[in-house]
Image (cartoon, rainbow, N blue to C red; front, top):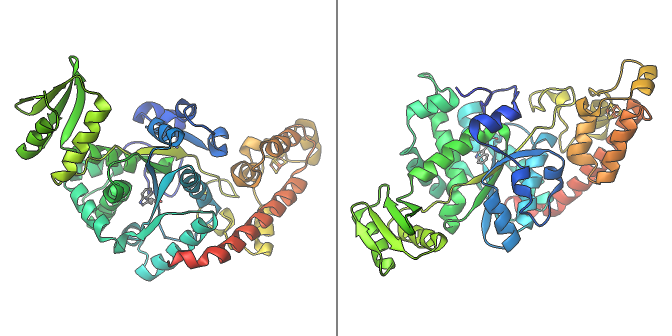
Length: 417
Ligand code: TRP
Ligand code: SF4
C-alpha cells in the first residue's frame, strides 16, 4: 500500500513533504496567486496542497462555472474536526461554485457497520451544520441517489482489483461492499459533472482522502472517449475508446479537419474550443466528457489530547452540541504547549505550534489575524499563562457554538427540504 495514506486508518501521520514529492500534490502557494482573495484557511497553512486548483482559481476570478463537492461519512456525530471542510465548501459556494454534498452512508454502512437509520440521523446532523454555516446547493444520501449509483457502476468498469490492492491495501478478505463504496465515492466526485455537464470541480478534503482523488482522476481519464492534444501546429483529437460515429462527428464538427485511423487533425483551431466541442460530442454519443477533478488538501486540527480528533474518543473532540459544562471541562483539560512550571513558562514562553488550544484558535476561534498573532506573541513571550489562555478560548468557543446553534435553528427547515 502506498505509505502513509490509508483513508480508513484510525491514526493519521502524514508526511506532507513526502506527499508532495511522491504523489504530485502541489503546495497550495502555487495556486493562490490566481485568486482574487485568499481565504484564511489558505493563508494560515491549514490547506497545504492541491491538485489542479489553478483552474478553480481561474473560474473564481473570471466568474465561470465550477462545482464544489465533498462527502461526509455519517459514522458518528459531527464535531469541530469536520468544521474546516464545511467552511471550505461554503467559501467556494460563496465564490460562485455550485455546491454538492454527498452523505456517504454506503461507506459508513460497508466500512463502519452503521445501520441505515443511524446513518440517516448522523447525516441530518452534518447537513444541519452545513446549512447553519450558509451552505447552498445539492445534498443527497448515496443510498438514495440512483443516478449516482449508476455512475458508480460505470466508474467500476474502469477499476480492477489489483488497483484496489495497490491503492488501499485491499486483500482477498476485503468485503465487496467496501470496494463498492470506493466506486461510489468516485461517483460522488464525478456526480456534479453528470448533473451539470463537464466543468471544473474542486473537492476539499483532508490529506487522507488523496487516494480517492487519484483514483477518480484516473477513472475520469479512462472514461473519456478522446484525448485532445496540440501536435505539429494543429490540434489532434485522438480516440481512446470512441465509437466510429463519435470520430465521424468530430470530423464533421470541424470543417477543414482531416480524419485518420483513430484520430482527427484540426488545423488552426484553439485547444480550448476543440476541447469543448469534443466534450459535447462525447455526451451526445453516450459518454461523459469529464474534466479531471481538482482537490485541495487540508491538515487536521489535532484532538484536545493531541493525536486525532475522533468521534470515538470523547475527550478528544468538541461536539457542535457540547454542553457548556463539558466544553469547559474539555478545554481546561486539554494538552497545551505550556511548560512544566509557571516560572519556566514565564522565562521560556510556551510553544503554540505544539498546542491543541492554539490550533483550535488558528483553525476556528480567532478569525481575526491580528488577534491570532497576539495570542501567539503573548504565548511565546511568556506573557500569558495557559490557564488564562484556555479560559479565553473556552469563552470564544462557547460563543461560537451558541451562534452556530442559533443558526441551526433558523435553517433547520432546509435539512429535510
Ligand atoms: N470517504 C470520505 C470520508 O471518509 C467521505 C466521502 C464520501 C467523500 N464521498 C466523498 C469525500 C466525496 C470527498 C468526496 O470522510
Ligand atoms: Fe497554548 Fe495558550 Fe498555553 Fe500558549 S499560552 S501554550 S497557546 S494554552
